[in-house]
Image 1 (cartoon, chains in turn green, blue):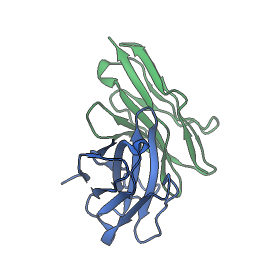
Image 2 (image 1 turned 135 degrees about the vertical axis):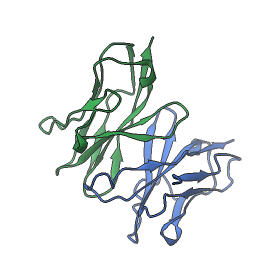
Image 3 (image 1 turned 120 degrees about the vertical axis):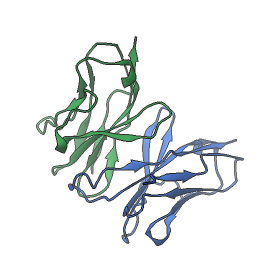
Length: 107
Length: 118
């Protein structure tokens, strides 16, 4: 069965520090992986997908098939990055979300 | 164009009452998902509709929960005999849902319905 694990429920870093939100997936095939974000009082929305190999708001995520990981990284955190982040995986069927990590950037 | 809409935005009900939550997906989106977002619990999958296929109900927590999607568009999530533990934000999302065909599988979320069971 498809499963996505985000081991950290809460993550707090200082402004300007590097950020890494961990995500591991389990799927026997080649899933498509995503990061979704929910800012305060806003809708949950797509942040980035691995297939696009893009950087959004300074965030990047690299798919590591050997470690079955898709960690989200940003070299210098900003206060506006404070939000709830969800990793998600889609194989042949429905999209599966992790439990989410609440990121807080301290000034 | 209009995004996913949900109604009501807030619902307060008494324990034991039935409630209906509505979702209007983006026109043309074949896939529709319901999730529950509880404080400290993350995003919990409830049910998934894809076109004319039988829905995936594997996430429904009990038989008090049911959902239907009429005409492949609007969906209603019904919770019977509500309990206090049903209090949460219920999110709906839709997508074109063609797996591995980016960007068609991006999910677009509604604003949610905040349910409070007293």
